[in-house]
Length: 65
Image 1 (cartoon, rainbow, N blue to C red):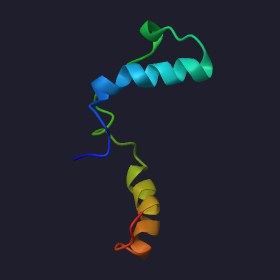
Image 2 (image 1 turned 90 degrees about the horizontal axis):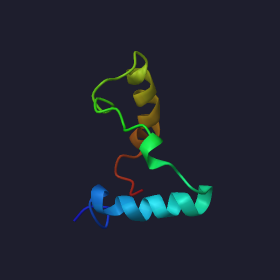
Image 3 (image 1 turned 60 degrees about the vertical axis):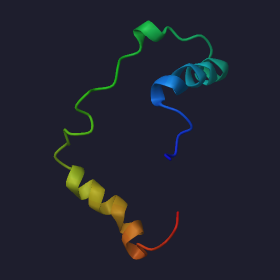
Image 4 (image 1 turned 30 degrees about the vertical axis):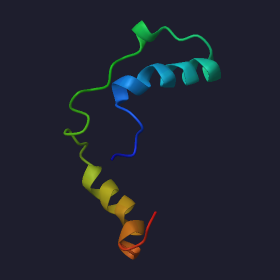
């Protein structure tokens, strides 16, 4: 079982309702879709940033977050 209670596609309407409740009407047709390569294409400084982010984890890899 995963962390989410349903698939992203099934959770989208509820998420959109929460966004509208917080920020007001949204023209969803004007929202840019996510970049499909966003998880594979890394910026030049990604390795250094990723190493920095992992420093806390590496202090105690057995910790439960």
